[in-house]
Amino acid sequence: MSIVLQDKQASTREWLEENFQQTLTDHQQGTDHPHAGFRRNAFARLQSMDFPTRRDEDWKYTSVNRILITPFRNGSLSSVSAAELANCQIPGLETTRMVFVNGVWDQSLSDLDRVPEGLILQPVHQAMEDPAVRKWIESQTARPGGTGQNAFLPMNLAFAQSGLYLRVGRNIAVDKPLHFIYFNTSEDQPHFSHPQIFLHAERSSTVTLIEDHRALAGAGTCFTNAAAWVDLEANAQVHHYRMQQQNLETYQIHNTLVNQTRDSVYNSYVVDLGGRIIRNNLSVELAESNTETHFYGTYLANGEQHMDNQTFIDHAMPHCQSNELYKGILSDRARGVFNGKVLVRQDAQKTNAFQQNSSLVLSSGAVMDAKPQLEIYADDVKCSHGATIGHLDETSVFYLMSRGIPAPQARLLLQQAFLGEVIRNMHLEEMANYALELIAIKLNAVSQTIITS
Picture 1 (cartoon, helix red, strand yellow):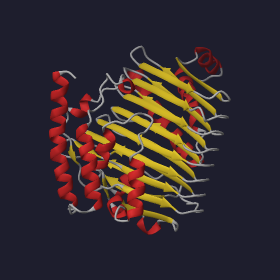
Picture 2 (picture 1 turned 120 degrees about the vertical axis):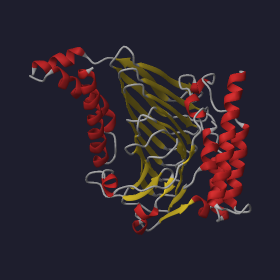
Picture 3 (picture 1 turned 30 degrees about the vertical axis):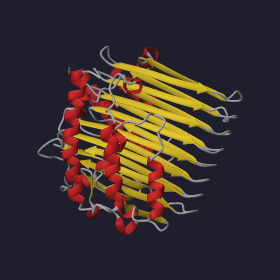
Picture 4 (picture 1 turned 60 degrees about the horizontal axis):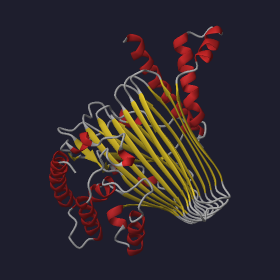
């Protein structure tokens, strides 16, 4: 490691140490409280690790230097207006809402009186007072994660101010989606937050979780370091949405680690629209047979936005299937990264795995780096993967123009259709319509910028 890098990492450790001590003070947990010990162990692990650099293969296209040199501080709970909250409503969809402001759970804005029967929802520090839950959480966080361990995971475990533990009981189907809204608001100095979810879906349960990250006007420089651990017992189904509309001064890293057992189904839907630097690590271990896994992701970047999606699916057992489709559109000087790996182990016979990444690059300054990977050690499998990077089909543009549609509108329609192929896979029509509306708004804004520039 170079001297410059050593100095940078040392400086980062100094402000992390200061923030960590403040975190312990703010939570006023006794030294013998299980969560306090859990935090200290996580912080010790964090201090023993180096943050990733571009010398690391999985991070070669994404630098976190801007995060490390910014002395972030813990955010604080501030007010959110009724209009700002109403703006988060998903048209036509009734949800159970949980609201977080700068990483702090605002229970006054949350639907605590509407938590459905059969769902346990607790702050992590409270849940860990139960030895059985503590053991389960420790087992989840001990999993290595196929996208590679990185220092941002123990950082989340050490600093999360309002982590939540959710357990869906056996045979319980939660009828309304759980809508977790994470606001970044204005602060006097750069601040960070650490959204944290532990979701335990017991046997034959079903639940829909929506993670909704957004910045309010004037939010300034923010760093969102989010993590979710999802454990599916036999025959459980989890539909996991993650949407972010951060401002252009926000850095966001999101780690999601999933464990699936027999006959379970996990669906991931990702829509990335905002942020300055976005990095998503999504890792799933198919630990037992007959599981089903679907990843659907979209990203839309312009200006100098940077969006990096890293996915890993570990086929460890036979008779499992996975399907992955990511699409993105890049313009101006934006950069996109897709690094998806499917590992098929020797025992994973009868695996059916599909992976595809496609991107539209609309300007000479935009860059897309794609690295789809298949690593197969079984011989009786059906697997395919691919990546395409291209421009809009001018023949299709001309066809629409010949039908009386102006060229700018024709291009917008084709871009919407391109991303719509992914969005249409969402299991909730209301979520699909909402995502398409947000995409259309940004595409129109980007189009107007291009026209006036």
